[in-house]
Amino acid sequence: MNRHTIDTIEANLDGYVLPALDGAQPRTWLDLVREVAHSVGVAYRDVISGQRTKSVTRARHLVWQRLESLGYSMNEIARRWGADHTTISAAIAKLERSGPPSQTRLRRVA
Image (cartoon, rainbow, N blue to C red; front, side, top):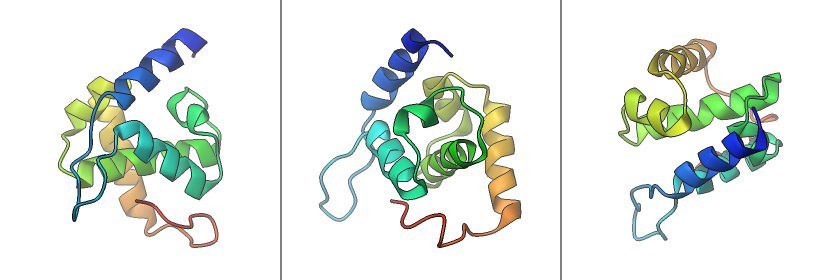
């Protein structure tokens, strides 16, 4: 994936605000990507890129799973991420089959 595409996805994700919970500050989708990337120990720009290393892919899938749990449809996630909804669906299903993440690999996901 080229830099222009990564910048476009980054701008897309930064433009959408997550629902604020319990009076917390509003956060964007990009804030969530940054938090998940940090908790997994990868660079957030790698998460939004097409990079396919195991840790980066897992972080990306965790972001998608979290967005779905917040009520976003797989179509909406896919559209804003520049992916196909079946990719989102398969990734979330894979996470659900694998069980909870190891605490040694994942400190805290928002």
